[in-house]
Amino acid sequence: MQTVFARLGILSMALFGAATFHHPAIAANADYPTKPVKIVVASAAGGILDTVARQVALGLSVNTGQQFIVENKPGAGGIIGTETVAKSAPDGYTAGHIATSHAINPSVYAKLPYDTMVDLAPVTQTVNLTNLLVVQPNLPANNLRELIALAKAQPGKLTFGSAGVGQSNHLSGEILKQMANIDIVHVPYKGSAPALTDLLTGTISMLFVDALSAAPHVKAGRLKVIAATGLQRSKALPDYPTLSESGLPGFNGNSWLGIVLPGNTSPEIVQTLSKETARVLNSPDVRDKLLSQGVEPVGSTPQEFRAFILKEMERYAQAAKAAGITPQQQ
Image (cartoon, rainbow, N blue to C red):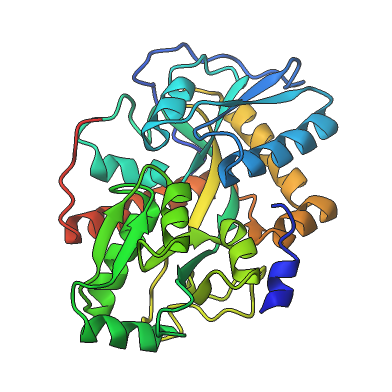
């Protein structure tokens, strides 16, 4: 297993109807881009969303001859940064790099300041992220079967952390509870980083967290991996069995990242940015670097990414409802 983590180093055509914000459509320029492009990252600097955005931005800058600049706008589960993109001119010069929360937020917030599928045009899914279910080393469970047995023997005693109510790792924990029929207690934090800190100190029992964040702690023996998320084993982490193959068929707790543009952006610009991003993601050096970090490059078309987001919105709506999450004010 350690050899796996040794590689982890440092780490529909989009919906083009009239947008709520009534920006006029801007005609596509055959030479797009002709000036710097801003990529708004809906999270703080240093996280996986930011890290991948900067790798993609660098490749786009090299390939197009125009600068792609990352700007971080964290807060409110990605809503603040996403709203900035939704309200920007649809000229292709303000894009957003969004995460799984993009598909979750419509189910956990009573009202968003934008329409997810109208005011934002899906461009491409950049990467697929395998998360790991990790526990304290002294927890007497070394695989999913033993963890479920332990939870059933001690109902209400084991805890799982999350980045906050309604975040993807919270819903993964809720899905685990439902599928395994176990009673484990949710402990929300303001981000995955403080949850990981509390797991390391023994305050909570388990956490779903991205492989890149978990890697140094697993290597050092400070955390144990129970299983990986996803319906199939990760190409980046093939040594770890999935929860789906370990007794919970169909369990999918993977996360993803992707690029969006303002909703009324011309199809030509959307397609151009999608193709250029896919070209970056599929270049051997970027692909190898991402895989070495536990991240799988995707590079889907706008049509594929739109269909994927709709499917994810439906999946998380069902999970939020089953978890009894009441939509809250943003």
